[in-house]
Length: 455
Image (tube, rainbow, N blue to C red):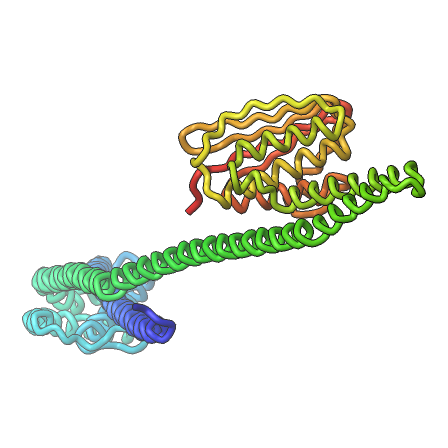
């Protein structure tokens, strides 16, 4: 069985598991991000190298083109300046690609294959470098017009250009191949990291989320069960309380009825007999004694009526049907109200407690009609089905405005208020439903629905 201490221990366990799970996901995400950023930086570097390698090939072609123009000697000033600038850029770019250059943001070459390719083109590069330097020297000495002197150096550029361009093309291809391999490796790495992340999430689902789900479901089921048990316990306590109240009330009524009947009733009866004896004496005025005797008879009747209302013997002796008939008889004897009774309740289907409570509800309803309704007709109907007994008390009296909200909140609703509240509470003690409808000038109907058996 789970206790608050058990729940606290389980909660701490899940807190630690959650903390570890979140830490693992955070570290894995950070590692993935750093790794991907590193590969992206490498990709940027690869693209940077490919661009400079392509530029180097372009510069070598441009340099040869300007050398050929200088050889023709048409526009030696402009072509000479363009040649010198292109030659310097070509030479600087070549060195940067092979040995690295911080200014151009080119790292030192670490690829053995590319280093071997640069070694292969060392000879044509060196020949082109020597020829370019000689041409620049001629330009500085302003001997560029001497085409015969420049011609062998231009020819040297042409003779080595093809080998140099072929080697640079292979270097560009190698740079591109390395970049593609890096991209492929990056994709594999991303898929691997994604698989690890999915595995971690599945592992957390199996080790944390599913157990937590089961634990929460168990907790909620326990809470619902506790809530249901609490409601059942409250209902039982309410029933026990109601039974205790009713039993105590019945015992008290019986005690008071017995005391009145055995004490005051017998004393009044003895008084009545003494007065009848005094009436036979001639010196006593008969008229005064007759008044005293009549008053005594009235007191005896009233005492019997009160005793009957406290706990009618007919209910104990003959059951609910006879008690209801007796109520109707009392209405006819003590008022001018015409009473009709339609009774289908069978004897023995209700418990003693139900008999007493239903009798008290009917007694309260009939007393309300006699005291307040100014009615001339009263109809009492009891019907049954397989599970419930239905009781309806209808009069044609003055009626009133029913304030259901106040009635069902247990508040006093005026002249009928306290009695209606009592009837409602007694009905609910039996697990039934109480309803009242009334219209001023058109009478009132009290309806009850009470089950035979209450758990």
